[in-house]
Amino acid sequence: EAQLVESGGGLVQPGGSLRLSCVASGFAFDDYTIGWFRRAPGKLLEGISCIGTIEENVAYVDAVKGRFRISRDNAKNTVYLEMSSLKPEDTAVYYCAADSSWGLVAEEYDYWGQGTQVTVSS
Image (cartoon, rainbow, N blue to C red):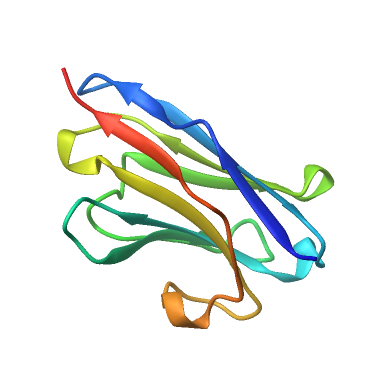
């Protein structure tokens, strides 16, 4: 059974940093694009970053570009999202997901984690 488990969320002050982890199991991790999505209170699900099967293939939405960094460790079946210069508007539940192709279209992703809460507040 395919499974994705996120961790690393929490409460952080504006300007602070967090590192989210997404550990995968039950599918051929190396063959999948892994994306990070978030859902802020009262808003739609938003794709924010993805990393392809080749680690150099990465994408970010403008809202997080320059502040977030995605990486993957295939030996550990893990993808990381390093978040810095966090803002209150980054507050959301963050999800990782796996896609057999490429992109940030949520409907195309095959497997999803349960999410981890990130709250940016003073």
